[in-house]
Image (cartoon, rainbow, N blue to C red; front, side, top):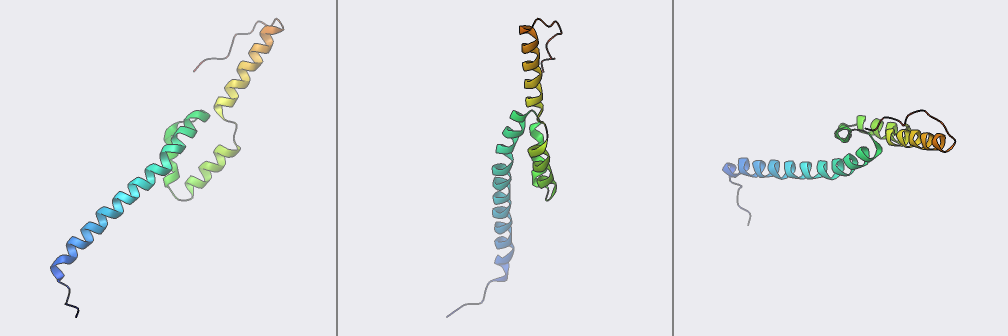
Length: 99
């Protein structure tokens, strides 16, 4: 009922599996990296930091640092608010540096 497998087809099968696995890995990496790239950029960090998420354990540490650190964008917002309050009260120091 079953025929013997043709050994000459094995390299083609494994090459096809390799290509399929490579495509799945690239798509999975893009699905992981692209949203975090946008999140990091909006938080004021370089978007390329999201590439660190592809490294096991390093990605987890990066997420912890981002979660519990003072984001650059929030730091800048705080400086602008302080400057604005000082202008309302008559202060004369210059506004914070714009990026």
